[in-house]
Image 1 (cartoon, one colour):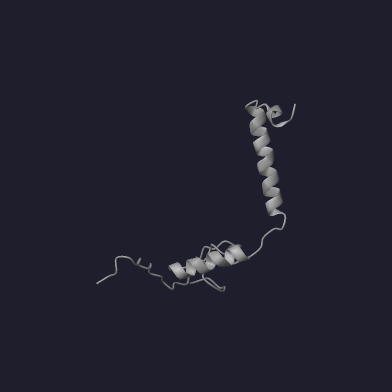
Image 2: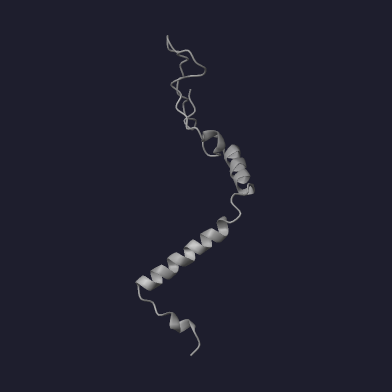
Length: 94
């Protein structure tokens, strides 16, 4: 009897073309940057997903990312306030 919570794995066939002279499977579709992505490899199970999420949190990316993010947010907020014609003089002392 099958477990209704587990997904069935697809069948894989080991077919090699007759006139192909090369290494690996020519029909395997893979992006050339998949080996550098942490989300490209499927991790099954709750424990594996949690450990990969913790690993992603511990790795540091671009050091200026937070600063760049907040500058972009500030510019967009000021642009929005300019478009709706918001009066910024209420924040200044008379």
